[in-house]
Image (tube, rainbow, N blue to C red; front, side):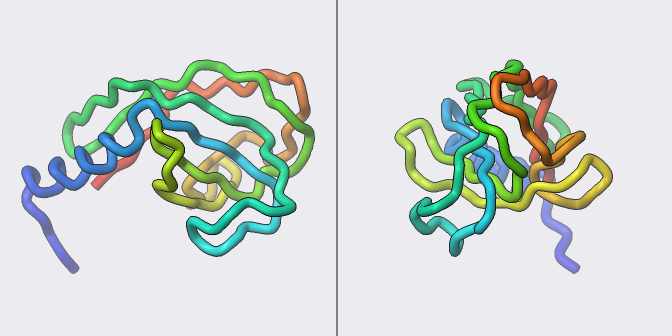
Length: 125
């Protein structure tokens, strides 16, 4: 087990927050490519704008995301976060709220033109 100091945890989170600020979370259908690899046959279901201001309090980065219209119908299998310059930041899996997936949703079945209401997203150290 590693137990980092609070200052170091906040510094690591700040590096992530700097990459996330003004970027985009995009949820896709299967298959998930290798980490950071090009999107090929996957359908982008929704693109969520990440705010430019991300606060870090108690070793947690919190971002508020506005409700967004779903662009296409399909099953959300994984997601990608890109920076404000569209550079790759991270990939993660999608799962239901009770799962340990990175992107947790009430349902994985997304319907075009419906509204996905996300209140907050958090990254913790």
